[in-house]
Image (cartoon, rainbow, N blue to C red; front, side, top):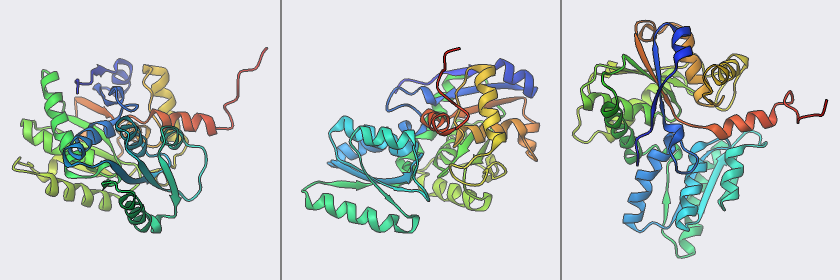
Length: 313
């Protein structure tokens, strides 16, 4: 996998009063880009080695993970079943892309996910296939370790380490991998995860658990090199308010950088507003890790009643 570029955000830097760069994992070439490409590329290569030929996974209708999982299955000719949860189902670009490439979609209530995933695995076994149970978000040791390796990639690209890395925090695997990677390259850089759904207590627990499960002889480093903020959850997963949307629009206008309101928009807002975060206030250089999610911006634009088709004047 070729390294993704690092770009300086000049106008954001002026506004924030510190040097701000962005690691463009949204530009990863496979499956629409994003952090799930790094994770699932690693996991799917292991599947191929083990003889897996079908996948069952889960996520919300806005899930970047499900979109990438479906596309990578299609590339291999594997059946893909997506057990998707939502209180109400409306148009979602990631969902439509997954269906377009042939994924079988089952929309269920959250308390039925495990049961339906197990049923789906049995169905595939009965068809003579060897399906894999892929955790939501690629939240597995192989996927998490992909982000430890990503920090090694980052270290080769930068002449000096940033004071702070800011990243969206959903299942917590990306933050866990980054924390491990920072310790691995010997940087005294802090990593701040902006939670997109979970409370700080719950998100911190899953990140710590992921580090413990994924660490394989690599020193994890101090437990204080990462933290999670839940100040920008904005009502929960795939929910967002005007403040988040305002930052998505402002960054698009200022830098031509496309964020989404489900993941990266919340994290960027957290970086810029920095409520109560001494790490942000004290950092002279900040790197924002762009984890992708462009289809969710399209979902918002499609569903926003204020956006209308072009009319002749």
